[in-house]
Length: 111
Length: 118
Image (cartoon, rainbow over all chains, first blue to last red):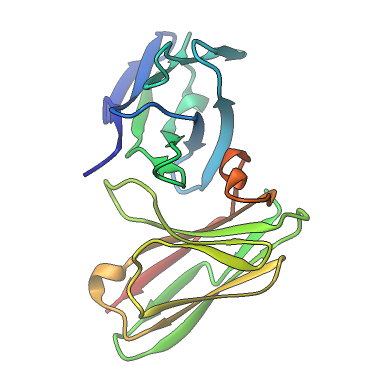
């Protein structure tokens, strides 16, 4: 089964609103990476989190790694049309030996 | 542009054809990856090469055959594919490392090859 779960699968957001997408694992993760894929494009690396409770910000994007290192979130404030795309998280554990990608959250922004 | 190129960008092939996908990276990386991206599914890692050695073969059917002649080039040879193999095939590269620490490195993706098997 899928080892990294992302919710929601789809997110419709009004321009200017905030939203959060979540990434969950039943297993403690060594790290978590986030990627963004624009429609018709390819995944582009956004950030990597490694430490328990870590929070990183990139302008309007805030990334957080849970204290137990089993979940992560991406929060976007004041959504813009440029935020349209699919956001993927990818996690690693020693037993997996490789990054496991979630199915992604597809974000649609309405003006 | 990310420094990772893939050719062709689109490919339509019959089930009896043999074709190859090509990936080239200009970033000085030593790890290269093939992924399959199907609609509504997570990215599926197919193969990983770290310093030209294959370190991952994710139970991929033998009709897909990778080749990594040097650290800048990666090929995916295709033969007798099935319609369910239709997907976007993405190549990526990252800094290589000892062991599997390359998993901690940022991956740079190419634009992908959209493959349709008839």
